[in-house]
Image (tube, rainbow, N blue to C red):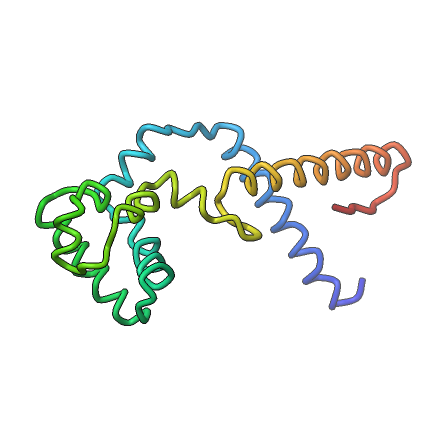
Length: 157
């Protein structure tokens, strides 16, 4: 055997072990939606959405939007509430042009839903990726079965 092949086989073995471990982890994985939602409550996960909204809707520079977002987060932290629990009057004390439209983007659900780019978190994008990978995995299983039946060594995913 050529010495350069050792690295290929080491890599293949590492991949095989990793896939076996991940299969066990994912097989036992259970999502606790309530715990996940609760974990976002005081984490200001929509702060980026807030800054983006200030830039897009109020036409502020990102530098100014970043500063305003920091002030709003400090107020929410002081009041021990989420960003969307602040009142319009409280938000307008930080910047007078903030309006009610801001409340549309300040929930975790809307933040997730708004990420519609490739690889984004919008449910439609996630479902599309699930369908894509299910199809790929089924195709890979067919190839593996066919190769095993014919006693070939080729694996293609």
